[in-house]
Amino acid sequence: MAELKVNFHVTRYNPEKDPKPYIQTYSVAVNDGMTVLDGLHWIKENLDPTLVWRYSCRMGICGSCGMLINGTPTLACNTQILHLSQTDITVGPLPNFEIIRDLVPDLLSMFEKHAAVHPNIIRPEAELTDRTGEFYQSPEELEAYLQFTYCIKCGCCMGACPTLATDVRYLGPMPLTALQRYNADSRDEGFKVRAQVASADGGAFRCHYAGECSRVCPKGVDPGKAIQLLKRKLVLDYLHLANRKKPCPKLEGPGHGKLLPNMTAPPRTIPE
Amino acid sequence: MSNGTKYWTWHMAAGVVLLILLGLHMIIMHMGGTLHLFSPTGPDAVSIANSQWRDSKICFTITYILLLGVGLYHGLYGLRTILLELTLKPAVEKAVTLLLTLTGLALFVLGSWAAWAAHTIAGGRA
Amino acid sequence: MAAITRHNNRLGVWGWLGGGRWGIERYAYILHRLTGLGILLYLLMHTVVTSLRVRNIYLWTEGGFFHQPIFRLGEFCVVAAFAFHAFNGIRLVLVELGFAVGKPIEPIYPYKTSVGVQRPLLIAVMVLALLFLLVGAYNFLGLAR
Ligand code: HEM
Ligand code: SF4
Ligand code: SF4
Ligand code: FES
Image (cartoon, chains in turn orange, purple, yellow):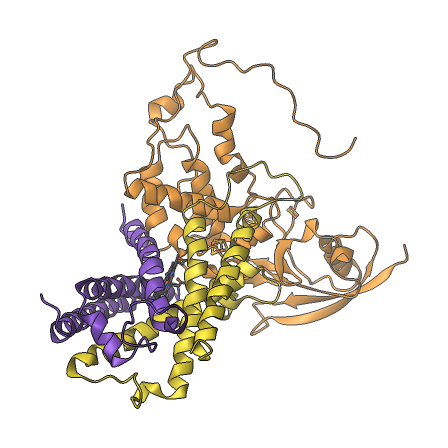
């Protein structure tokens, strides 16, 4: 395929010089298959070594390269330029965070909120440290939270959420999804502790299901779903209608608990 | 548990109650021409005669008071939600909550009193 | 070294509206807000105005202050706002209580999300709201008389 020139309209901001961000346009030589991340590299190598962004894995795993691309928060490494446009694309830092420089948002506020939701299994210390047995969890129990574990903490959902556009306290889709991930885990006993966080002013009820987080999430985590399931649990618990299942037991040793029938691998999702 | 879940649960419940009561209210008041519900004295649903006929019925008086209370709670809680999402100072947030609560209570008292008084005037027996 | 400043990139109230690239649930959300506020404003005034009937003041009837066409139109807007808010409210109650978002699934590309699960519901309630509005308009325009 012939090489194309695509204009990258990139947000620039140097806190030591610039009073506020501005847009700089670069003409990028684009080949088929090039991602927006590749385009940024091309700019840095060929046009402007001062351009700054954050990335690491360049394969949609590390969650570093979340940006506002053509008005949608998404991963630069997971977005092909020619899938968006043959002529012009805009690249900006994720909204709803402070900008450190150019395309680099300060994600610390998100990570602090993440830490605040108790994103870990809560069980009596003795049970967690005693190494003689495993927790028994059925495949169905695993499915109740598995989807929410795929989150890579990229913050795209945080950049898309309308509530976070004004509300500094709102925990936001990523931390609330992490909260629901542990609430839904059959090994966990921490519902009461997390309910405190989730029903407080910055909690789950600041979500109005605008659905943006689910739409933009590059990993199919569906934070909107997690948050609504969380609200459901909170309300049912308040009305004393929640079924209070005991957390799953610890197996005493080999042979204790249910053994799985012959297992087969799931069907392939890509052609051989 | 913090009270957030409690208030929000009742906000949702109020929405469902409003759906039924306010739905009826809207149909009676604005679709009189088509449906002629509870307006025995003529097609204009909001004529004085029709208003007074409804005021004389105790079930209307009671639903008016219920509708008012539920509507005020639902609406003012919703307004509070919106205002609190603006990242206000804690003192301002307290003031907002207080102001909205007082507004709600004042209007509830006024409206309930009026509904009751109208019922008595329209000839309904207490 | 100069103190490093940062640029606050929160979108502010305009961020509620979103840009042209957001989905229809975003617009439903913002309309739900606006109509909710509109109906609330009306309710506050309505309570005072109707309470005056105790003093035998009927401002909304023939010759009354609120019988002017502009207020009649305003009232119809309230009916319209109600139609949207109420029917969309049904969807929100179902969605936000976790009835219409589906169960957690394995995320396999192309991803299916809860947004798609509740979309038919959104379309259904909007059709109902429109029907309600049409009947309201039929009455408003006096066609029923
Ligand atoms: C007719 C039945 C109604 C239903 C089913 C309904 C339903 C709802 C629901 C489910 C919400 C929550 C939205 C969220 O948290 O995302 C809401 C919010 C709201 N409602 Fe209603 N509502 C109704 C009537 C009313 C009335 C009569 C008023 C005004 C007095 C009103 C004012 C509001 C306001 C101001 C909000 C806040 C909007 C926001 O947070 O974005 N609603 N309504
Ligand atoms: S939920 Fe999705 S969009 Fe949000 S941080 Fe996790 S991976 Fe990123
Ligand atoms: S669904 Fe909730 S958390 Fe997700 S973007 Fe919308 S308001 Fe934010
Ligand atoms: S560089 Fe790791 S997710 Fe894009």
